[in-house]
Image (cartoon, rainbow, N blue to C red; front, side, top):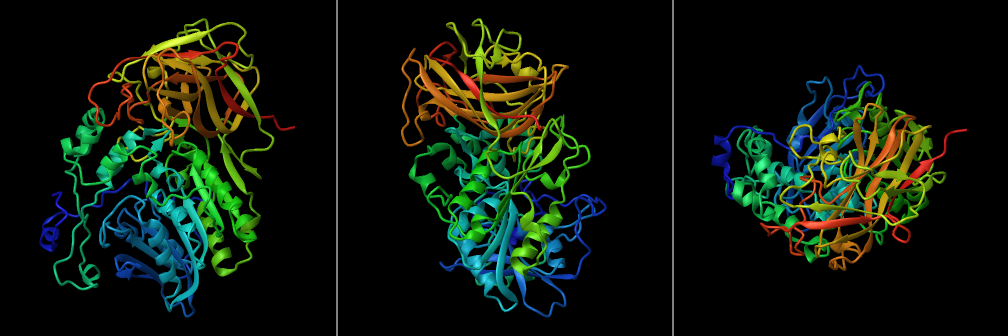
Amino acid sequence: MKSSSFRYSTLLSIAAVAAQCASSVAAAPPASDPMNSWPAPRYQVVIENSVMVPMRDGTKLSTDIYKPVGAQEKLPVIVIRTPYNKRTWRAAETKAGSGSEAFRFAEQGYVVVVQDTRGKFESEGEFTISTPDDIDGYDTVTWAATQPWSTGKVGTYGCSYLGENQIESAKLRNPHLAAMIPQAASGGTRYFGQIVGGAVELATAVGWYWGAGSKDRLRPPAGAGDDFWATQGVNFFPGYIPPAGRFEQISDEMLNHLPTVDTFKKFGGPRSDYEAVLSNPPNSPWWKARPYANSSDKFDVPALHVNSWYDYGVEDVFNQFNLLSKNALSEAAKNNQFIIISPTTHCLSEGATEQTLVGARDVGDARLGYWRIYLNWFDHWLKGADNGVTKMPKVQIYVMGKNQWRSENEWPLARARPTKYFLASRSSANSRNGDGVLTTVAPSRPGRDTFDYDPANPVPSIGGPLCCTRIPNTEGSFDQARAEERRDVLVYTTPPLAQGVEVTGPLKAVLFVSSSAKDTDFTAKLVDVYPDGTAYNIQEGILRARYRKGYESPVWMQSGKVYQLEVDIQATSNYFPAGHRIRLEISSSNFPRFDRNMNTGGNNYDETKGVVAHNTIWHEPGRQSYVLLPIVPPDR
């Protein structure tokens, strides 16, 4: 069932399957939740199914149009572009008692356009990640703005891929684009979210491309007209259809398979961009051909950015928030960038409850009135409503540990004090049972810690800020005890805190390292150790040593030579109460979140055998390894 030449006869013979990235559409909480509910509907809604909208190159994209019944005047439009099957948005109600945002916005007086992206489901063309989502997004907005039922003002909306294509298209500055709400959109500026510090987000890549990244799709019969999809009343999953339960049965084998680039070929995965992601280094022409926004792009659209502390790339979303303001061409766009950061995992901010569990960690009542905020946002920018939405705080963050929402004016916080917490030990920081210390006092005597990293036995990932793995209980915050018992994990911990410490802002580890290998990885993980010893992961990062001078200039290590490098640990807002301890874990693997460095200096993706790297972290005068934490002073 992997052939890209499926015809209509095949379609009729298969069962309906609506598999997609589970978090691609965050369902609204029940309407009875007073913290997060939609207002009463103003209109009933009718859907015009599967309208084929032409792009500038002639490719037609299948588009559903949600229209308020009885609206006499022209209406503004909200555009949602998805690779996850637009038909799944047609369910007006869900089992949770609430429905698709497409219906909810249409009920409030918007025409809502939901479109299959190029090469997915009913849309024509070939699917390649992110390409050309910038151009297709621009053309779709223009089409929506020039329809007879449109006022000409258009907003865009959606999470994950649906947010990333908003960022990519926004740099083209369509004059009809009046506002957007990109959620979990870090991949719009960073390698589709799948390259981090030069390493590949392996678990996400395998899970996402297996379930959502297929290039194969069913096609209408020869001679079929543009009304073919609209007149066929079947819901189906065009293209690759994984056997029921197949991924869950073989996921461990797939993630451990070497060479990694052959995984889908070995296990029967779909034709996709998986191999291209694995085999193209960050500086390759293939990646440079993707339309991701960068620091030289200009923008001219107000945006409400939404993300979560346990989602991948949260600091990248903050960077987008600042970039769209800094590079804005109008005062309206410059002064109207807003951001909301919840404590949840990928695309689940709106699902927070009175007791929000993120993995195994209880972070309290993290609810917020998202649906009202989103509606007010579009009402203001698309309908001209004077509802005060632009007077809300520029930055709204959830402070974990204090378990409360807080308003800020900027990011990073001007009052945060970057504080160095130095690594120290008596050369035996291996495991949580070692003597590693995290201290604000710089080391005054020679010191180092050494460990062996064997790519055949990598440190296991336990939770983390990732998405779309398709494996239960792999995302979020969990006790790190199992990993911390290993001798290839260096553990540095403060004494129990005499008073609480708030860490809010960007994080990085500055390490002095040496290795026996030409190339290896260095990982860093910030951990909150509770009084009972439970060690919850807060944030983490990785750097492939060959990229310590940047992606454009890979360089090898010389055995025994000491190098300084920086590991980006993204960002967080976490309060460590009195009695808790702040911990930093250092190692050379975090698998299967990240692919393994085989330590050979080779390609990694096409290798089946690695070598053991003897790695050293130095902490002594002149070689002071530390983690830089933005400490927020206590409120007066």
